Amino acid sequence: MTNSISTTTSGPDFVSFQVRDLATSAAFYADTIGLNRLPAANPAAVVFSSGGTAFAVREPFPGMDLDAVGQLGAGIGVWFGSADPAGLHARLVERGVPIAQEPFEGPFGLQFSLRDPDGYIVTIHTAG
Image: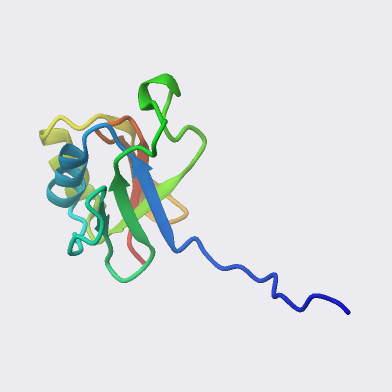
C-alpha cells in the first residue's frame, strides 16, 4: 500500500528576521518603512502584514549568536512593495538609513535596496 500524503507545499507564507534589538527593529519597520504592525501574539516577535505574506522581526532562537554568523541574510532577497518607492527612498536617506543600491528602473518598477538596523538587505519596489 502506498502512502497518500500530498507532497504539494505552498509558500512562503511567513518570513522572519532574527534581530539583536526587537524594539529597535519593530520601530524601524513600522515607523521608517511603514509596515502595518499586527496585534502582539508572541512576546518574542513583532509581526507585520498588509494582506500578503506576513513578515516578522523576532528575538534570536535559543543558542543563536547573531554576532557570530557574519553578514545576516547574505544571499536571501526579501522585497517589499511600495506605492511610492521614490518618496520612501528620500525619507530613508533623510533619516540616515544606509542605502545598499540606489533607485533604478528594474523589472518590478522603481527599486532600491537598504540595510536595516541589523544589516539585512531589503529591496523596495513599485507595488503592483
